[in-house]
Length: 306
Image 1: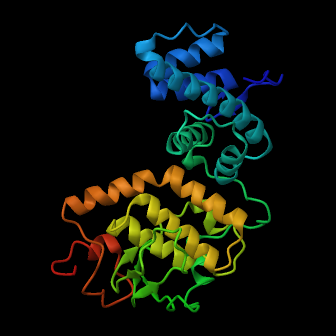
Image 2 (image 1 turned 90 degrees about the horizontal axis):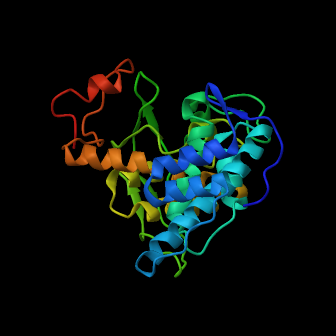
Image 3 (image 1 turned 90 degrees about the vertical axis):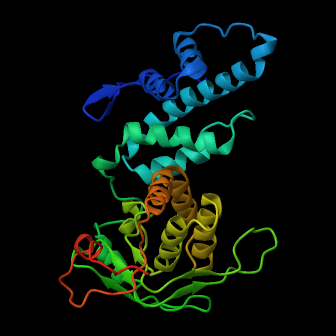
């Protein structure tokens, strides 16, 4: 691990934390050999010789502990400059050292834990580069509503009174560009009546990104695939990235958004899976007759789901 910079502890939530304490907190969440190895590294103790029967386990724990220590140090340096969940996630992904024993999913998971510890979602985020004023989800929606391209049918959304949930008023279809390297579905169709809340897109992107009307279709496709689960979560996130690319979203923004859904989207995927198993639906066959109906009210009405 690189030598620590001399600085005052940085604030995490309600009390200060330094890089060693942050590393210990993340390792404690994981537990087992990782927690023990992280404590050894933070205390400056050498790692004991590996027992051949446990060599793989110890090697993996050393790799994870080393990555936690380095990433914690880097995260605190970045956070001192800017408290922004999306930016911190992106920079950690780009700059944190890698290890051959650390699979990408685990690396992303550790980054997610660090970001959550340093900047809890309830704290919010400061504007990213180029953002000057905050926009609500509703303002963000208005900027791309109805825009179509060669491979996208125009989007028509009907809001519920809560303005947090929207009915897809006509089917949305997307066909990916021909690329034999991508294991993508031949077509993605979001059915008429699907209720989306765009929850899989982190709130920072409602206002921190350039308003070109280019994320809406990709966001609804992503929300639908997370609900429908006809593909793997990895493929759903890949569809999101490819769709944004075709819609002209810059590589830097796509990477930040893809990283965010990979790191933070697991809970949305799991919640959707649990709701489907419980027999719940998000595809309507009957729409509310007036604009003052809330989603939580309409979803309890009999015989409204397809």
